[in-house]
Image (cartoon, rainbow, N blue to C red):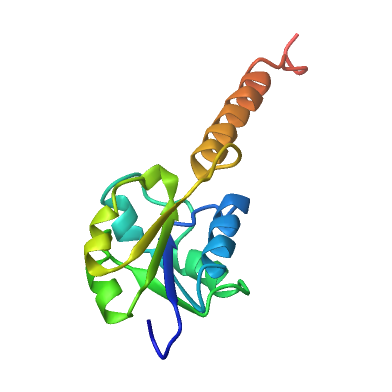
Length: 150
């Protein structure tokens, strides 16, 4: 809490920004008075999965342009203990694909919400669809007869 206001923190990679990202940020906004959004750096993301498609500078600019966050910061680590202490975080929101991973924040007095993405869009699915569509299109092109060859 800061000046009697509930401080909420959410973070993510936000690669190929889509509606579920927006829903989580909007949900986080509704849980308090001040919303801080962390955007994972390219280096952080590459430490635990494939690097993002969209560079960090563009991803953070997209999040800063939204109406929901009060503050947008780079996220350099998956350990949120320091940011919780330094920024007086009361509430932490993360996607339910991380369920259980941030329960340690309860020890710091933080309420943790695992946002239920449910069915629908995800960056992983978008990437799979792009690859599948590319392979299908490439297959059609590769199998086209050449009209110049008789």
